[in-house]
Length: 103
Image 1 (cartoon, one colour):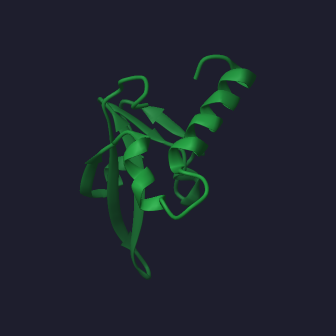
Image 2 (cartoon, rainbow, N blue to C red):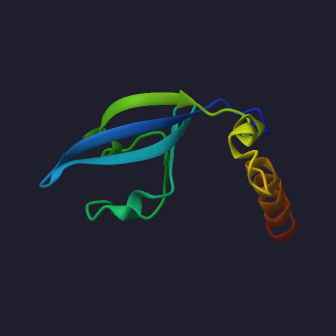
């Protein structure tokens, strides 16, 4: 998303659960919610949510928001590894583009 100059945020939320609280994270791109892991929860009706409105997300208390940074900003933390996060990201983007068109 950063590559496409989209202003996105990671949103961290939590809500009550019988064992304490459940944490959850999703993306917000402008006013659009992008959640590819909502199916981890029994009360979600769909596996993926991409919508400007989500009653389900209103059940979460937002605890933090973080601007999405360019993937290269994470490379330094993995300097000891043979492959950097940006290498993996750009390989993945290339594969998606070759199989599905522009991503």
